[in-house]
Amino acid sequence: MSPDVDLTVPLPGRHARRDWLLSLDSRLFEGAAERTWPAAQPVLPRLSRSANHGVLWFATAAAVAASRTPRARRAAARGIASLSLASFAINTIGKRTVRRHRPALDPVPLSRQLKRQPITTSFPSGHAASAAAFATGVALESPAWGAVVAPIAVSVAASRVYTGVHFPSDVLAGAALGACAAFAVRGMVPTRGQIVPPARARAEVPALPDGEGLVMVVNSASGTSDRADALTDFLPGAEVVVCEPADIHVELEKAAARARVLGVCGGDGTVNAGAAVALRHGLPLAVLPGGTLNHFAYDLGVEGPRDLSKAVKQGDAVRVDVGRFRSGATRGVFLNTLSLGVYPELVREREHWAPRIGGWSAGVLAALRVLRADRHPLEAEVGGRTRPLWLLFAGNGTCHRVGIASGRRVDLADGRLDIRIVHGGRRPALRLLAAAVAGPFTLPHSRLRSSGWCPHPAHAAAQVHRLRLSGLAPGTLLAFDGEVTDVEGDLTLKEQPEALTVYRP
Image (cartoon, rainbow, N blue to C red; front, side):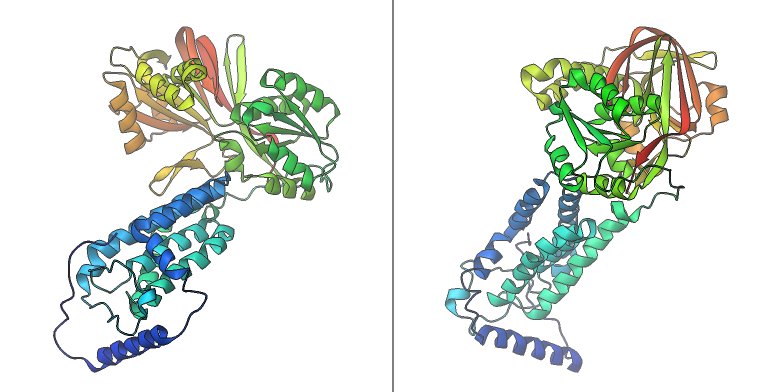
C-alpha cells in the first residue's frame, strides 16, 4: 500500500534534539533486534507479510461482518473506511514529507528478515497506521470487537520492528496517524452510539423478569428464527410460536388473545403486521429483528435478543408514532416508509423474478425494467393541481443525514411525516440518482399545500402531519414497510402521534 518511490535522502542540517531522538530510536531498535523472542519467531514475520496491501484487514473485516449482527457489520465497515483514509494519508503525505532511511539489517537475525524488503522511506510505518486505523475504527463502533482485533493490530505493529523494516518511532507515529484517521472518519460519519434520541417519558408496561406473558410470533421464512431461540435463553418463560408467512396474521391474532405482551420476529413486513394487531388489541409490542433490513428495530435500538430481553425484564418502553394510509376500502399502517411510483413497481418486479433467478439478479433486472426511458411518470393531484412524479416517499418520522452517510431516524415520536418526492420528466434514473446524491430541497408545509409541489426542478421534501393525493389511476401500486398493495382515487396519509407502545432498552 506504499508508493514505489525511493525517498531516502536525509534532510539537511543538524539539530541536537533531533539527533538525540534519532540516536535513542536507533538504540531501541538495536536492543529489540538483539533480544531473543522465542514465541514470535513463527508468528510475527508471517503476520507482517499478511498485512501487505491490507489483505489481513480485509479478511478480518469479512470475518467480523460474517457474525451477522448489525453492530459487527458497522464495525467492519468503519474499520475499512478508517484504514482507507490512513493509507491515503500515509502514501500521499506522510512518506513524501519526512525522509528517513530504513534501519540497517545487520543486527537483525536472517531468520527474522522479510524476503522482500520495502524500498520506500521508513517514516511513518504504513502497516502500523493501517493496523491502528482498522482496530480503532472497529472499537469506536463495537468495543467488544475492538478488544478482539486489538491484539492482532498490536502484533502487526510490533512485527515491523521485529523484522527490522522500521524504527520504533516509525511504528508509534504510524499508529498515532492511524488512530487519528479513525476519529476523523467518526467525525464525518458518527457512530450509532453518538446519536442519542430525544428524551421521552417511559411508557407504563409490564416488566417480565423471566418473560412469562410474552408471546413471540416468528416468521419462519425470515431465516433468522434462531434469534427467537436465543431469546428464550434470556427469557425462559416466553412462549415462541414459529409459523409460515401465510399464517402470520392468524397466529398474531391468536397470540394477542392470550398475551400480556405481543412479540414479533421477522422483517419489516412482519413487524408491520405485529404492530397492526398490537394497536387493535391495545398491547405493548416487543420487536426482535429477524429480516434483512430491520429499519424499525434498529432505529428503536434493538439489535438482538440481549437488547430486547433487557428491556422486557426491566419494563423499559416508549410510545412511538404510527403512519396511517387510506384509499377507499384499502387502509393500513406503516412504521417505516410508504411510497408510490417506481419503488413499488421495482418491489413487485423483483418478487416476480426472484424465485427464478435469485434475489440479487432479480433486483438488477427489476431496476432495468422499471427505469427504462420510455416509461411514463405517475400522476397525482395535490392542492387542485395535477403533477407528474417518479417517486413519492413518506417516512414515519424525519430521516436525517448522518455526516455523509444515508439518513436514519433519531426520533420515532416527532409527530411528522417526512415527504420526499422526485418530479416526473425525462430520464427517471438520472432524476432518482440526483435526488439520492444531492439530498432533498426542504420547504415549509404551507408552500407544499399552495404550490402542489415545490418549484425545484427535480426533487423536494417537506415535513407534514397529513397529506392527501387525488386522481390516482386504478391499479396504482403502493408499497408500505416492504409490502405492496393497489390503490386508486384518493389517498390520505396521516401521522398518529405516540400511538404504539414498544419495548426499547
